[in-house]
Each structure stands twice: as structure tokens, then as C-alpha cells.
Image 1 (cartoon, rainbow, N blue to C red):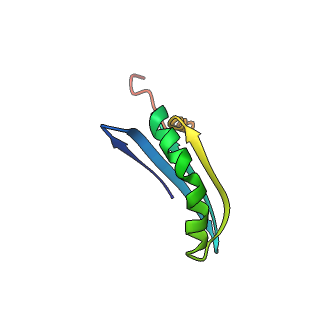
Image 2 (image 1 turned 90 degrees about the vertical axis):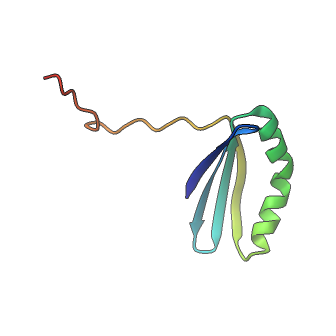
Image 3 (image 1 turned 180 degrees about the vertical axis):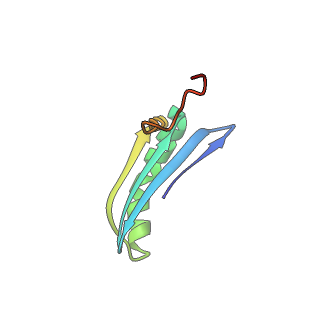
Length: 82
């Protein structure tokens, strides 16, 4: 699952959560440097909180800046002028 929210005060914040059985991997991102710093300070609490809910946490990471938008697959855009 991947989602992002944009707040006027703290900028864009998002998460990508992958679940496979009881295993979970979490990637967070924040566009604003101060928001990224705040999230980074909370990361040590995330894995134990998920483990307390019965999940085997295989990874928790923070990315600074919003991820790049995926490129469109070939054939997705057509030139209607021809």
C-alpha cells in the first residue's frame, strides 16, 4: 500500500507499507527537511510498535524528499495530431 498526504504546515508526507504474511516493511518520506527530521526521531518507536501487534518487521526506513513520479509506460500517450 502506498499513500501520501499533503499538509500546508508540514508539506507532503507519505508511506509505503508492504505486508507478506506476518512480515512488514515500511518506508516513509517527507518533502520538508524539518518534517523528515521529526519523523526520523520517531523511527526507533515504529518497529517495536508493529512487533507488539504481531508483525515481523523486516525494514523501516525514511526517505528525504518525495519520490519521483513513475514514468508512463510506452503507449500510454498518443499523439492525436496525426
